[in-house]
Image (cartoon, rainbow, N blue to C red; front, side, top):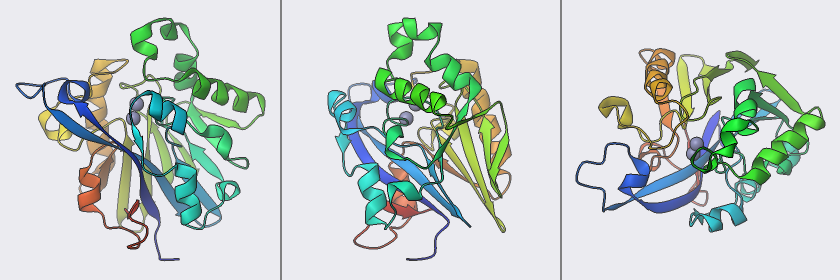
Length: 258
Ligand SMILES: [Zn+2]
Ligand SMILES: [Zn+2]
């Protein structure tokens, strides 16, 4: 297989009204716009780290999202078995990030304390707050707790040499982002701390969050984490497909980040 340390796997897409994707909509709110769905894969010596697990077919269909390739099928196209994944980072428990947790029988799951508390706590009594969560996905996460397979974190943690988790909150109470350092290269996998790259410069935001102040503060944290030369990878932006080339012509869903 080709040399790579980090991939973005493009597994889903949807057309949504702009008003579903941006808090500041100006006069574009009638227009449909595209949102893409990714999981990310990090390869380190003796470790294969999957960042998020994507939505599953039922949940995607119920919400009108197009599943281009099931994340597990994408991995197998890359020659990776479910059981090869040593670690799954759950950036947060939303349906499109924690939909296939039981598919990885050997993995340790990394979740922030605050995310599990939020996804199983009193805020989920409110329809608007629980909308991006799928009860089944959250229950899957709870089952993993009872199987001693969850590694809880409270803030920053280095889960493998050069690979760190950082709690940012905001979009979801316990949202975490991932940094990967390899030589001079630094990658910041922002997940839903940054849906679209442009939001970092125009201070726009995805119109769904647990704490708006933390959403704004998360942008600062991303800039600090990236420093001068770090590359920030937005969580749902079609621009990723323009910026990063495919691993191979027959693997168009796998984009080489590093
Ligand atoms: Zn989310
Ligand atoms: Zn998302």
